Image (cartoon, rainbow, N blue to C red; front, side, top):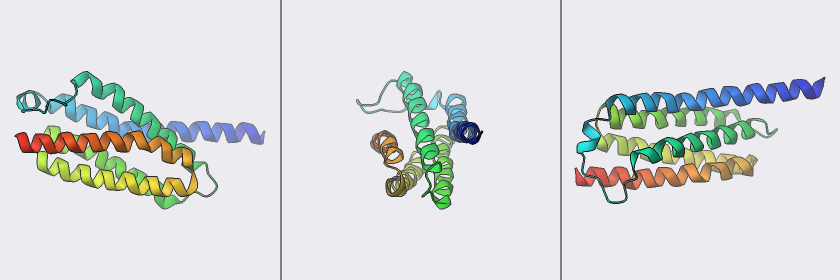
Length: 160
C-alpha cells in the first residue's frame, strides 16, 4: 500500500511539474506565433541563426529535461523549498523573454531578461548540485542553449 501511494504521488508530482513547466512553453509559444511575423522575418540575422523548425523540438526537449530536473530534486530528502520558488520565478523569466522579444519587439529588453534568466539557471544548478546531481546535469543543455540564445539576441541587437 505504501509503495503504491508513493508511486502515485511521484506520478502526480511529475504531472504537476510538467504542467507548470510546459505552461511557460505554451505562453511563450503563443506569443511567438501570434506576434513573430512579419517583424522577425524583416530582421537582419547572423549566419548562425538556426531555421525556425529547430526551436520547437529543442525547446520541447529542454522543457522535459527541466521537468525531470525539478521533479527529481523535489523527491530528494534534502530538497529546499526556496529552490522550488526560484524554479518557478525562472519560468516567469523564461516566458517573459518571448513576450518582450516577439510581442513588444524589444530586443535590448529581451537581452536583459535573458541575462536574468541565465543567472537564475546558474543559481538553480548550484542549488541542484548540492542535493541531486541528476537535476544538475539535466540543466546543462538548457544553460548552453540559453547562452546560444544570448549570442543570437546580442547579434540581433547589433545588426538591427
